[in-house]
Length: 261
Image (cartoon, rainbow, N blue to C red; front, side):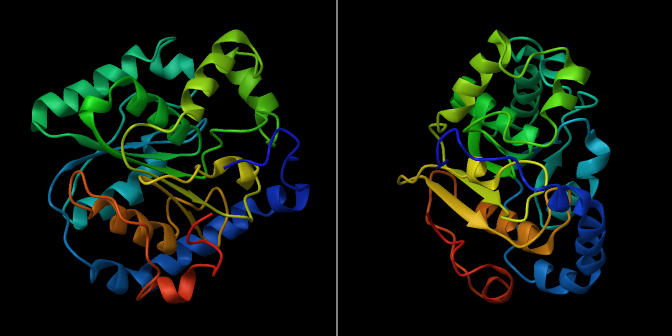
């Protein structure tokens, strides 16, 4: 859960070092792949991956290829750059249509993996259409707390045309802050240089969990620890939920405080 609305934005140092840290995380991926691929194979169910603010499906390419290699039916969101309501529609109608399209084509409930703003939207989607969603996994997604506890909120306003505290954004944020009625996992890093990590954690109940990783915000989609955690969560049977357990690779790469909050 968040610590209220007094959480500050990440430090400028963390923000300025985002890119080199993300590149380092990417460079470790080839070394981690054998361990990542050694786990259980996926059951083939569809997974919709939503990109972060400003980015497009290009940014989630490595994550989707990994999920495909693990045996899942990974899908891009096909809505161009994530510019908030400009991309998904004022009422989320374009995103809902994409979910319905995947569900109709596969005949199965869809797991949602959303990075940053994409995770906020994944939570919205699961609240709007829980009948079509299997589970939600968010990566560094600030779905609670002060929307200005971020180093990019002014950029958001400039590129989307929406005020961060305006009617539309406030309404959507309030809806996203509500935990979806499906299993939900929030993955976050305390070294996040873009958004306050305190606002990226889920409230604890029987179907939610928080997983802390070491890394940057911009590297979450290529971070081996994140890929391991995502695969672990997706391997849960439909309707099943147990807390994430640090074992195997996880004993090495997850902070000791990252299991549950």
